[in-house]
Length: 403
Length: 69
Image (cartoon, rainbow over all chains, first blue to last red; front, side, top):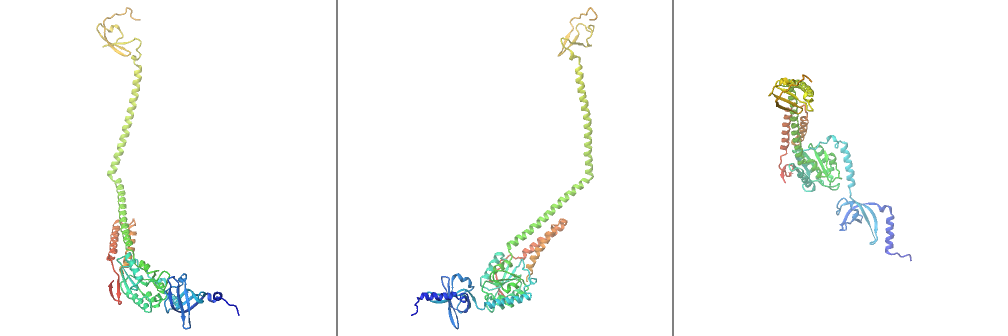
């Protein structure tokens, strides 16, 4: 009897065969989704089936990034992953790392082809792009009546400027009827009195956004006379409408920011303008005033009155100089006099009187002869430091005439 | 397409031009005043154009009829 193996050994052996198979480690399988279960653990269990059979699949929580939509029963998908064995059940299954809707590949190539075609026609050219008005007062919107897109636009718009009129053309944005409806919306708003039109919708798969890749929509945007802002999906979603629009906004909110000017900002801009004009006029008046003042001073300087006043001042100066000269001279003389007086005083005989000598005078002058005096005459005796008055009591003449 | 939106932009351009002209010292004071008057009038027009009534969303029905939401 040949060797006997345990179940585990067999399953392990088979698992090993699978892992070593190059083709099974990375494979894409096409089929229809069935028995799809989103488990609370985050893993997704489903089966792929076609007319010939079924294969079980699992997508682990960690690989959910590879799935860009919600899987539903009956969807035709292409699942990429590896085929491996679940040893415990002795079952092989497809461990999915990516799931795409079948036909997507077609859509991508269709998109690229259409994009190239329209680009070659010049529909994306900058020269056709109309500027978005800075102060739009009426904003047309083509999008779904319900949904995040219109809510975002309303919120952003009313926050920025509640006085701007929003006009919504409620349109289908998904499905076969979406494209013609969007076209109608663009045309309808273009015929109305709006300053700018926002065309868009919220995020979704390439299939969801497909209407915005349709040529009729591209043409309607291109032919629209009113500037068009496209706002399709999220930042990363780019559609033909984005290329042909006058301006692409990454999201509907961003489109509202582009279309609706901020009222507060506008108000402060207007205030700035008024302030600048006021200041300019004020400055000019000030300038004129100072120029007038300068001229007034210059004219005044040349007036006869001013000339006369200047002469008068000059005359006063001359007078001052003259007087100063005179006073200087006078002072000079006075000084000389004082010096001379001093010198004269120095020569006075009284200065020489000392040591008991005195000088005697009567009403006839200096007494130089005894005969000039009579008994009873009043005489003055000049002594070094004073004068004494006296009367002559007795006169006695010297016997000899002279000493 | 509404003419008003463009006119506010134009008015701003014009206002900037006016300010630039006014700033020229060689411009006579009288002309400066005239420009100032014109500027203030433009500012008023700009403000008049934005009629400050809160506007609710208008929804187009059947391509024509318009109702307030």
